[in-house]
Image (cartoon, rainbow, N blue to C red; front, side, top):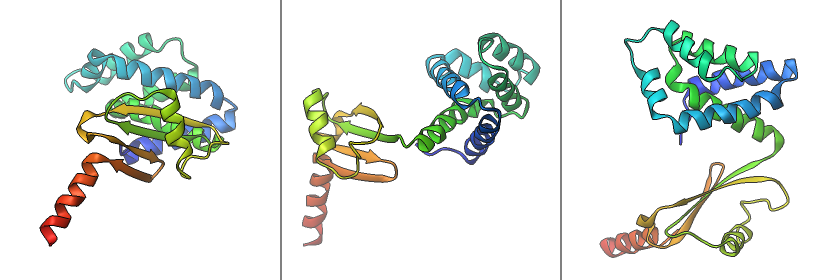
Length: 179
């Protein structure tokens, strides 16, 4: 998923501030909570996206929902809403998490399969490629998409290994069309 420039800029600003203030670990944990709340609450997303509700009301609601967060996190949320960027709040929080993980050397790995796999099969796929550094920390996300028919698609950062049956069938189809 592509992240907007707005989310990257706010996240970088927050990271710079938290590094100076020594609050990166606290805000990192809180941004995970923000992502979780925003992902689970469709009503909150609809509320934030409603254009005829003014920012003061949105800030009041956000203050109540996120009242357990640190002052830095609450200030970021208020700033984002005040500037009319509340639709980017989840993306900003996720981008902040990504930036902190990048600094910590955590790899983000996404594995897409046609059916759920056992732990042994997941480990075998991850060991079979040189994209995943087994010695370092990595954050594995497994997606099940039956439309790939079989095999897997492994994505690490901006690199991808597509060993799906769907891709192989499409390649055979192209080969037949060319000949």
